[in-house]
Length: 134
Ligand SMILES: [Zn+2]
Image (cartoon, rainbow, N blue to C red):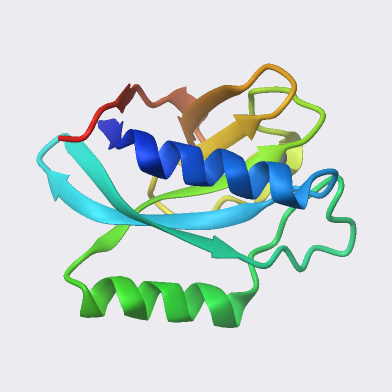
């Protein structure tokens, strides 16, 4: 499984991460699956309603549901979830792993190093990212 991310979506993801810092940002990516690859096509920033948003994230459930419905209406499926680590690191926290509930790659935007990485959770396998349009 590899994830293709068009550069404009990557730029929008980093802009969201910067806007919400020092709080963690969270959002969803809709797109298309082609066999072992998934191509992201739309970014859905979501409110982080975690009690301690500087250390964890929890996507607002109502907003997440609306994003999933918007994807469905647009012929897209959920291909990834993302959140930021305003103080790093570029890998999942114990909480990220424990609370992971979707069978899609979890993207982590590490602000200090500007590294974007993706993992299958709770297993922790890295997901290769390709930054291109198609
Ligand atoms: Zn995290």
